[in-house]
Image (cartoon, rainbow over all chains, first blue to last red):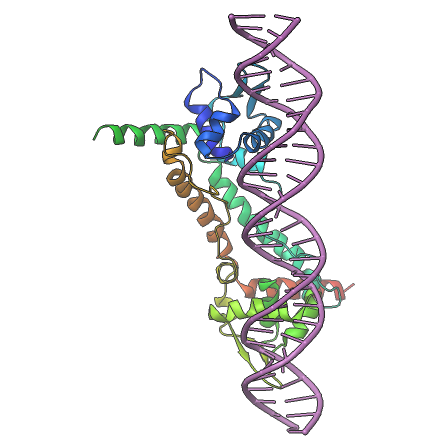
Length: 138
Length: 138
DNA sequence: CGAACTGTAACTACAACAGTGGCAGTTCTG
DNA sequence: CAGAACTGCCACTGTTGTAGTTACAGTTCG
């Protein structure tokens, strides 16, 4: 939802969008959209202006916002689930599994994040516009 | 939990472990362990034998079981969450977001999986044994 | 037979999350 | 100034996923 909203904002860099407009495109709820955009604002990705005529705009160029930026702004916990609680200290394997898994999982998660950071909102906007044009040309 | 269990099984390739023994190391429950190991068995990673003296063993060498194998055996859905429901077809952006996100997210998930597939259970066993020896040498 | 296992269903408890209504505060416009 | 159009935020519901637990049937070995 965050990436969808950012892409919509990147589509029109002149005017701002309201949470209701974005919620329409998401077939979702304005309050939900404001919650998510609130996270993006805290992360410095978007601006919001209150009152009549207010709404949301990107805080910087779509070319300078990556999918990884959106991801970290919205998602907090790790993607790969760790032990629900520490394993037994009495087991020779259990003693080390948490640290071992943490190392491997962090490496895997970073590989994913690295790939996410290669795509920007501008890429998505361009691709969506291209696909839209192809549709209208038939 | 799956990786933890596989690592324990890889530690002793001669004898089998019971779900109770593995649950002890996990500070968890035998039934839970059997559920997870059941998935691993369905994926062809482990064997189980019923009855007295029964238990679990690796179905192939620890060097031929990767963290990615364990991951796919246990985890079903995608790691990166998609739209909860399709976006609006009326929106020029919304029409393409699902396909666009699917492409990007699959690429990111595959980067993570590729990294997971680089580490085997044998690696974890070796690392755990090494760390254990370092502890005992002090 | 009885002990020690797996296999599985049914249940509880809890946390995460999409969605919703309500309302206070802010800003522009007539 | 009054009202319309916004954001910000809280409290609540309903659903889903998941760790954990109890219970019990089936299997194997001594």
